[in-house]
Image (tube, rainbow, N blue to C red; front, side, top):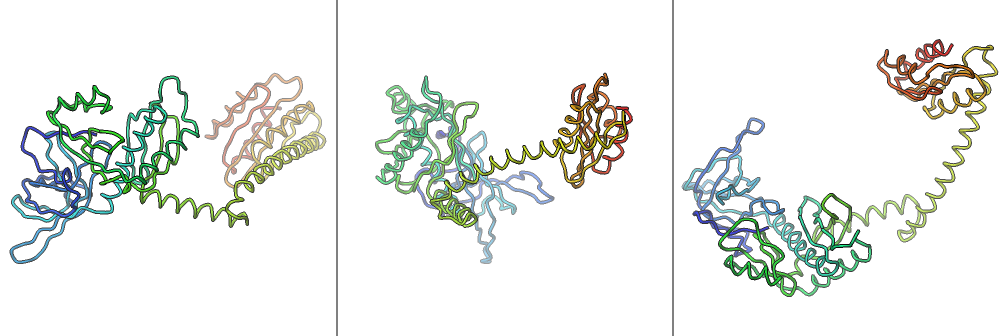
Length: 423
């Protein structure tokens, strides 16, 4: 994220030089932004501001503006959004208008600002260490409401981020955090910035052709062209935790949290792990082993269930064929069963040489399956689609067997119609 001093006269950006969250200013302009739910949203320009506007992946500051009337009455308006226009002016979105010339005191939401500083400075450090340790270059950054992400382009020949790479990077980042290295911001001429880029001190320059650039230096780590807000030293970033890694279109996306967010995430994880441990009646350290055991037991139970279902379907099909009148279609409806059971029964009936139709219901949902008998040339898939489409249901299959889903209330009727078709 980069920013430069504009050629036109715009509001003084107090956050460039000071971390103060309270300031005095004068309203210089006002405009109606839009109507929202019948209420007007106004935008105010100030002669100076400590509110950071959205940009470079960092969200805007929030807070309040307070105006005092000659009578002593105060008017407090919440700043809901802050953005910069194409001319470099900063606009503060509010729900109550303040006329040009009004003197105000601004109060920036400290918790939100500190959180954003921790995540943003943490991103700078994380990106620098990923580049240093594994040759992965940051191509984008997003600061979200609960976590942040960087997208990385791996060095040539690398296919993925290995677990040991992630551990090494996380440990290196947190060592720098403990060292408390200072961060300094200063303005440089474009020519000097280009020289820094040529020497390798800067990874890139902004696309805009600005005369001066703001450089943020993290001592001993990196120089970065950046207009965002940052902590005073790496110690204020707090712990940095890598949360998730996934493959995305432009590389590998790493999700992370810093500082207060890291504490909240650890607390949340601990509470979740504790709840799981209590449910399983084991110590937290024994949760992985118990879950592994349960998964193995589940796989065994699934195999046993599948074998029992096959046995039940076979016995059911044999009984349907035995009890059906000779040359009659075997048919039945079963409650509490699913379409897989219906398919197995008709398939096994067909293997015994008999055409069959089976319907199943499970609550409001239903399904039907059909299979042709020995010597039949009926196309079951086409026949079933025609019958089901007439009542707004859907299905399909092969010439030998087909199935479809419908409402439970339609099952009886559809079984009868499909039996007629098979006959």
